[in-house]
Length: 286
Ligand code: R5P
Image (cartoon, rainbow, N blue to C red; front, side, top):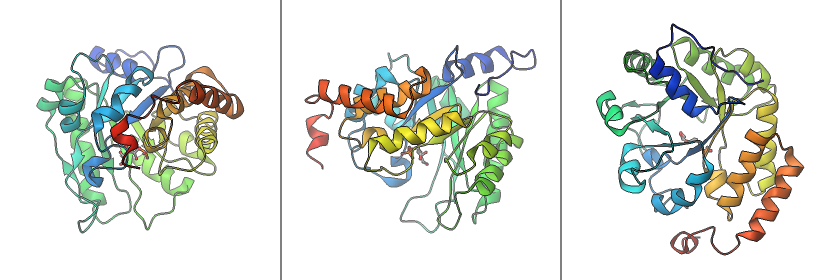
């Protein structure tokens, strides 16, 4: 069973309510759609016009992870999908060091936006490790004050190895500093990462891979080894069939489908929706 927060009198109603909007009742799992990449990558492939990428996927996600800029410009305020607001940044792929992040969005702004959760990156082992860990501690203090959970993203520098020792270290530090959810990457012996982290661990999809089945395998293995869900971006919306892909990933996270069953589902949805899955403006950028 994935981690589920005990009902606790020490956790405020608002905090419990927000966490219950991120993790589905019943299985305590989540499918979070990540579309925050532009905050340091700029107009990422197939996310050039965020509204067109996001809109068809909204019915199938439990929550949406993005920055305030894309939220205000590209998401209908009438949406009921919980917002996971990225509030760290300040560096770009052209800069000296991506780990040189600060908190970019205030707690008042997050409340105004009606964010359900706040997300920020930590860079364990990187040049600005200390600064990003302080960012997390301060953000947790603010989140606790207002009942907003914090998702810590364990960003991995080029020089780091994505193994259970490194990822386990980063996840545990995030939880010790008070993060309510930790996002990391899948690795061999992933169960050791989960076992060492006393809050729910969710996994990123990473760079687009060529075969959809591999993404479903990644999802299946992560869930089987204790992940509470996914926070996935490029392997959904850079697919030629993003609507089919998100539904296939969802079937692994929430419906217990195995890799072959989910891939079959993907293939059948792909054929159903062949004409309308990618908006014309996005198709033309390929
Ligand atoms: C990375 O810093 C971003 O926060 C992304 O949200 C994250 O990497 C998940 O997206 P993807 O599945 O594309 O890796």
